[in-house]
Image 1 (cartoon, rainbow, N blue to C red):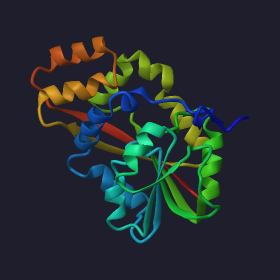
Image 2: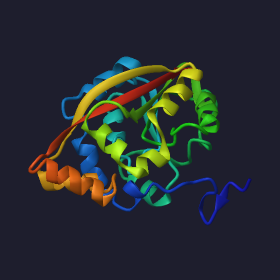
Image 3: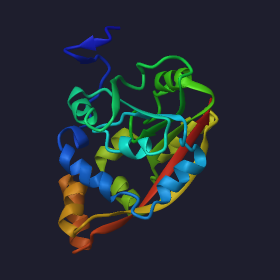
Length: 234
C-alpha cells in the first residue's frame, strides 16, 4: 500500500465536523465536561503526570497544553495536514495516524484517543500500532460516546450519520474481546448560550435532527452527555 498520496496518508479519512468547522469545534471542546468529571476519570485510569503522553488524533491540538502542564512530554499525532498546522501552534506534534504512529517502539506511557480512529470494527491495525509504541505497563484510554445514556445519546440514536458509523453494542463487543476495561462517565456539554450550543450540534448532526431538538428545548445551553472510556494496558 502506498503510504502517502497527494501529501496525506493513503488510508486517511477526513473528519468533516472538525475539518470543515475548526473554530466551532473549538467551542465544542470548551463546552465538554464543565465539571471536570471526564478529566478525573482519565487521571484515575492512567495518570500522565511526569510521563510521556500521546494525544492520538489531536486535531487542532486543543488538549495539548493541558496535558503539558504536568506531563514529562506531551505529543500530538494528527493525519490531517491542515489541522496539524494549527496543532503545531500549541505543542509538539507529528504527522501520523493510528496506523502510522511516527514514534519509536516502547516510547510512550499513556495514549489518549478522543473520538479519533477507534470506531469498531476494523480497528485492529491502529490498536497494534498503539501497543507497539506503549512501554510495558503503559495504557491506552479511548474516549468514546455512550450510546445509551444522556441527551446526546438520544441525538445519536436519531442521527443516520451516527448509526452509519457505529453502534454501542458493536463497540462494546469489540473492546471486550480485546480485554479492555469499560468505564462510564456521565457529564454534560455546557455552552455560553443557546446559539453556541445549536452551532456545535449542527456540525455533529443532520439539520433536521438539530431542528427538532432546538424546538423541543428552546433556550437550552446545556445537555447531558455520557462518555465511555475503554482502557487497555500494554
